[in-house]
Structures are given as C-alpha cells and as structure tokens.
Length: 343
Ligand code: ASP
Image (tube, rainbow, N blue to C red; front, top):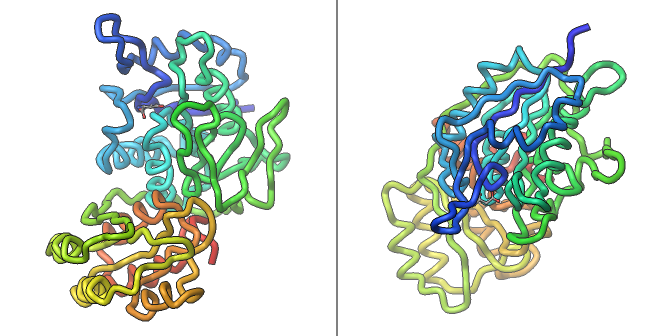
C-alpha cells in the first residue's frame, strides 16, 4: 500500500532562525539546519519531502507575492501529496492562512501552517512539537481513508485552528494564537482530540481551483475618540483605494459625527467597499444594535460580522483580485466562502 505523503514547505520564521553572534539578532537559516534538529521525523511511517523558499524570510516580509508562490507550490504538487505543512513566521501567519483559505478554492486536502516562538535549535524550543504535530495532522486519515481535516489550518502549541479564524494574540508565550470566534478543530494533549462539529466537511469531488491574483488597494483604519474626519477624508478620497476595513467600537459603533459619515458615504458613492470590523477581539458586529451602529448600516457599510481582521482583509484582496464589481464584492462579503464568517 502506498505510504501517506506530506510535503513540507519552509518559508522562514523563528522556527528556522539562528542567532547572529555579532549582533545577537535572530536571522533565517537554511532548511537542512532546521531538519537536523528534528531527527524524530524519521520515526513517522510517511513519505515526507520538503521544499524551501530560496531565501527564507521573516514573516514581516510576507506579501501576496509569497502567497502566490505558496499557491503555486501546492497546486503543482497537489496530486502527489496527501497533505501539506507550511513552516512560517508567527507574525503574519494568520494573514497567510486566511489568504490561502480563499486562494485555494476547492481544497480537499490538509494545508497546515505552523512555526514557533523559539528557534528549533533552542533548548526549550516549541518548534519541534509544533512541527511534529503539524505533520501528524497533515497525514491523519479517517477510517474510510479520507483526510481528517481538508482545509487550511494553523497548528500551534495545544490547538488546531481554522486558518481564517485564527489570530496572533501573544508575542512571548508558547500559546501564541487563538480563534476567539470559532472553536478549535482539535485540542492537542497526550492525544489529538478532534472536534468534528467544527471541522469543515470533506468534499470528495471538489476540484482545486487556485487563484493567484490579490488586489492590495485596501486600507485599514481604526476609530478613536478625537479622530479628525478631515484626515480620514484625505485617505479615503484616494482614487487608488478600492476597499476599506473600518475598525469600529464594540458591536460596530461609530460617533455620530456627520462629517465622518459624509466622508464614508462619499467613498462608497465612488464605488469603494467599506467593511465594519470591531476593534474587539471577540464577538459579532451588530450594526443595528445601537443608533451609533445603525447610522453605518443605513449608509451602506457592510457588517464584517465575526470575521477576524486578517480574514476580512484577505477576503477583500481576493474578491477585488478576481475583478469583481463593488456590488458583487459587497454581496460576497456577506457570504461564507471558506468558513471565515458566521452568517
Ligand atoms: N519575526 C518572526 C516571524 O514572523 C517571528 C516568529 O516567527 O515567531 O518571522
């Protein structure tokens, strides 16, 4: 019988870094170095192969170009492997996992991202267990031979998360990620306990349709008491802009400031799409709950509901990248494309 196969894609991040003795700073190192620290991988009865970015990067340098590279690697190798593990820096991992969840339409194999807080060469590294668990989950099958998970996920510390529901919450602790609005797909203790209710359905006949175009003419702007509408006006009137993530208070509220509302309305009249995302880490945007939110709904701003910032941002990039009209983008922001939002 053919052995289950996993392709590891190494992009960089702390997991593979090593300390520069002169400056003391962590710098990316090559993939052989990384694997030499995890000889345990050989104990898996799996066919594991690896591919690395030519120059491993700190994930602060990730851009849609690297997402395209990942989409290409996965689609070109899709039929050869049962699952994929992406080693990635933690800082922008949630952006990459969200982006891939949209770009890999029709995915029915596991794509598991992981990384670590400490380099794999460090004595107390969390990189080893994260990598080993990610491989195990990428290879996990149900009794009928179908994959245990068939979506883009993040494995970190003690949980498996849906990729477009996760966010980095801690820059120091090993438990660096959380998924405040969606239950983990599995908890990782002495055993891996899968949570079938939160795992996306396996679609046997789904056909992978990779999308590479992302439109970055997007901006995020955050409300604060005292925000000056004339400054917002300058930014929102930019002819290059197509989508705006508007970070509001609480359940989606903004001040009753007519100048600000007029600015938002005129951006929308120009064909820009504005999405209301709360500054709160968890909860749902209910624009109709208070007058302060209702005025936004009445002006045509679409509720981001319970999407993470990362999911809402990459979804806008993806939809505009497909060349859709603003009207269609507005409609699709209100539809769950890859389990990123609760409707
Ligand atoms: N700066 C690093 C990165 O995102 C942090 C990490 O990997 O944890 O690449």
